[in-house]
Image (cartoon, rainbow, N blue to C red; front, side, top):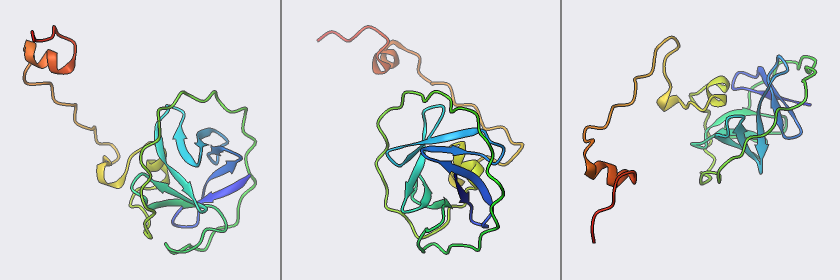
Length: 155
């Protein structure tokens, strides 16, 4: 198992083959063709040249041997790796998003935010409740046709 470090040089996960395991030994994500995928089937980012990058291309973590930029911090000594249970069954996933160019910067999102699919731009402060999505204003037959669940218009 290989330690995964964050921007501060702290061990935040372990890479075991194609599986990401948290420090407590729980499986948190897996790799599919170098894409980081959650067990809910969401693409979270990529592993590219020893860097874990979010969907914007900013760095959120790295493994040993990651080249600069961005600046690689001094890493803490790695603790003993956990003994994880068998990996959960992988979900079916859709096609991956378009890959973006890696940026030479660190993401403003933490490793934990990365794993839940939250970027710095759309993150919610801890303890806040995100707003509920707005209800559609037009529930007429026209809106139903646009959504595809109403009768089609005559031709």
